[in-house]
Length: 88
Image (cartoon, rainbow, N blue to C red; front, side, top):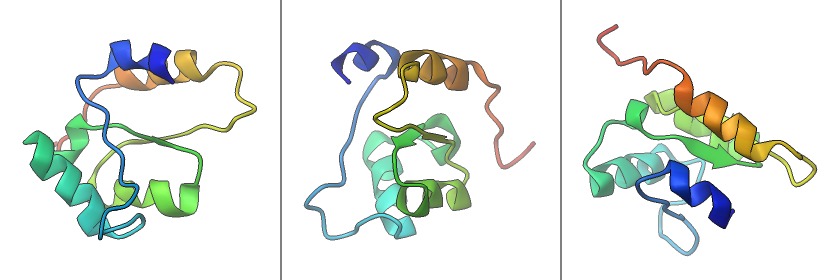
């Protein structure tokens, strides 16, 4: 996980917060804290039913598992995808 930090400006966790995934307010709170729109974030997680809910507000989601041997490659690839804004 620490090796991935080089690809991100910030890493946030929702553990112990009053809003929890898959509540959309949890994802909106992260965006508000970072002062960036959802489409400029990347949710990386291993629980599609909870983490994947971020896609409902336009936040990209990358599903990973502990068995993935290419997580870093997946992150790099996902970060290279074009950003789709709500205006496009």
